[in-house]
Image (cartoon, rainbow, N blue to C red; front, side, top):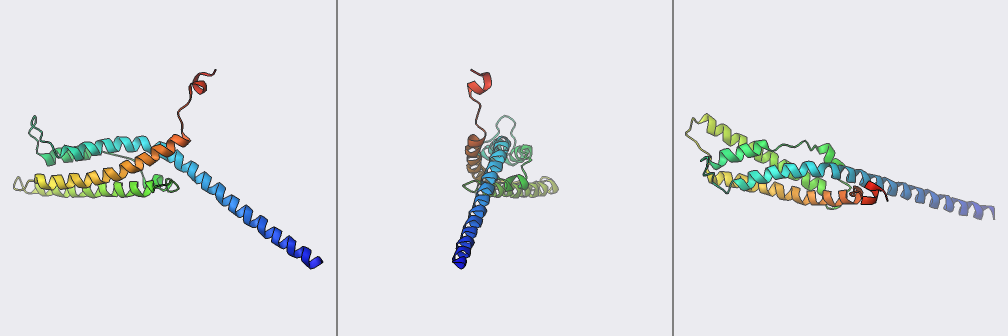
Length: 181
C-alpha cells in the first residue's frame, strides 16, 4: 500500500511539474506578444514615414520632370537619399512573436532597400567618374525603382500587421477615458 501511495504521489508531482512548466511557457509567450505589440506601435509610425519617402522615389521613376528637366536617375537618387529610418534589427527581433512574419518581411524589405541604395551609389559613382561620358539609363533607373517597389511591398504587408497588433494593445482612448463621465 505504501508503494502505491508513493506511485500516486510521484505521478501527481510529475503532473504538477508539467502543468507549471507549460503555464510558465504560456506566460512567457503572452509577455513576448505584449512586447511585440509595444514595438509594433512604436515602429508603425516610423515605418509609415519611411515607406512614404520610398514610395515617392520608386514611383517617381515613371515620370519625367518637365519643369526642371532632371533626368530620372538624378531625381530618383535624390529622393532615395532623402528617405531615412532608424528602425534597427534589434527592434525587429521583438516583432518575431507576431503572426504573419512581420519581422522577417521588414528585415527583407530593409535589406532590399540597402541593396538598391548600394546599386544607386555605384551607378552615381560611375556617372561622376566618367566626366559626363556615362549617364544612367532610364531602363536601369526603372529597374532600380522596381526593386525598391518590391521592398516597399514587403514592408507594406508588415506595416499592416504592425497596425493590427498595435490596435489590439494600444487602442485609442474612449471619450470616457479622456473626459470621464
